[in-house]
Image 1 (cartoon, helix red, strand yellow):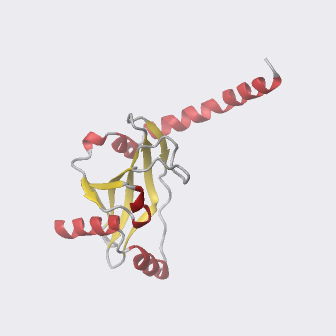
Image 2 (cartoon, rainbow, N blue to C red):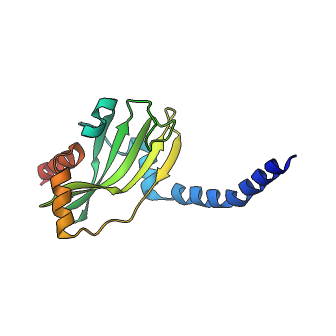
Image 3 (tube, rainbow, N blue to C red):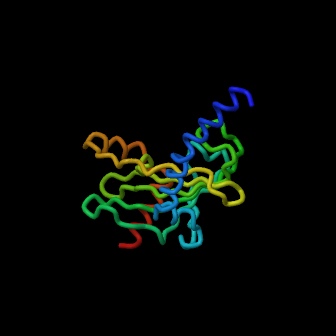
Length: 172
């Protein structure tokens, strides 16, 4: 065995407990468990794709049964969404073998309407429904008044925020 193989083997052994611990952590996460179990989400409702990715042929949906009120005063909700990728292009941030992704995202439906995508937990799957990656959850942002106005102006008409806020308005 050459020195390079020995070094690689030592490195793998050194980090394997870290990966095992990280894997176990997300396997015990109730949000990740919910995202992995598509059968428990209810019926999907198709929504228009994000305009930046519409040409890729992606199919987007939300799961209305997963809508939850997160902050009553600010009218902030969480909901599960899904993207089935229409393109095999993985030049961006998407995992190479990704077929689709499910995510729990945060949507503001008060005076200011937008998706807080940076707070999402996302599970990416391959075509055989195997988990490829788990990303998030990331810390929620505290928006200044200026940031709320700007986020609303930029994102109010994007399909996901529009669909979720319409769903909230119908459930009133």
